[in-house]
Image 1: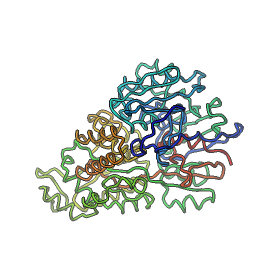
Image 2: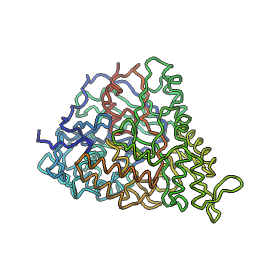
Image 3: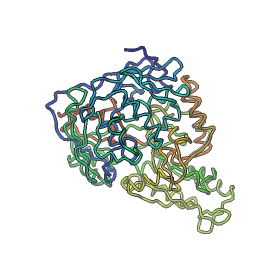
Image 4: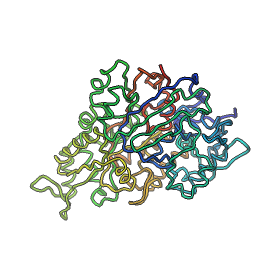
Length: 550
């Protein structure tokens, strides 16, 4: 194994001196069973492109694999996957992967380093596919010899290891190279290297079938995965509570009564990972005023929203944007306290009045020229907890003279409006990563956004600030832990001063699971992957590989 230039954990989210861990242990090939997932989503479109944000979570991991797996819950421990090893150059500008030999695509063709270089250069050729704007920092991706791929960055870019290694599904050149426009390619019958193939898809259900020739001997243990489409939480919850499904990833009110009490084999684990936030459209003529945005913060009782909407399972978030306790060491508590954000309706009203907004006899505010402070927030109708949370928020804002209209949309419509910036406010969350840097980058990095009407992969609120972009770039350029902490402190100040969005609750990985038929689940004692099905990719495939029949 080549010498590895291990870096500080805070530089790349990779532990100093940590060795690459082994893949999950193999089991006898004669096991099987069918695992059913219960997860309120939306009707399936039966597209599996790993570069489409509305479908990539269905494909990356179980079908299309990544170069490595980075575990957010275990200090960003790295597990080799399609790459067996990697090294950084001394100046941290060149990242070299050794590609695993003996891996085949499900059509029998060999995986080669050329597939890896093709994949990343396709993202360069078609920027809409580059969901994490990796090419804003890359200068080239080339093959070296018969087993290596070299990533050259414009400047030191250690945090980009996570995006390159963990977040990009590798696709076969012999198939995708024939696709004229991969930005519109549905990829209905994907050919991957992963543990599963798509054997059937309808709007109501996706069937994953074990890849009999998977490169990890004896894996996967589970023969079939069924992923039915539940468009709201209640039927999904019923499928779990009655044992029709064994793995759930949705909000369950009174989980102990409605799920745990139904069977002693039922369990749940909800680790906080990112923030659920109100994304504030920075192009809205009224919301452009930071005073209005600050008034929104003071008007919202986040603790009450968390208790009523989420039954207390998700804690209230802080305006600095740091998820605690998961990333508490990054939080500048003094700066947050000095900012003074708390639930204070009187202060919200005073701020608006001081800024020249007029409060009518009905108690509602208008601008100086008579436009009402009235906004529409888009939301996913399937998420009954979010629906309840926003009912509370609307009532709270009404008390300070701001009208909030809640538009509960079906998933496909919601995601389209979210990506295209067609909203005043949006209730949503980003995927985050091994340190808070990744969520801040997704929130605030200008190059990752887009003009209104064009799809943005992140930064849906269209926040644009060159100084903030420079801070985010400087974090990526540094491997000094103290400097990176200082940069995150400055980014927290952006959240406190500019209020580009309002974190409301700390999003947990909703994870309900039954040990009646299958065991091997991640737990607080063994957090080998984020436990949530679907959206946490490639983690959910790592979970699949650990599971086996009892």
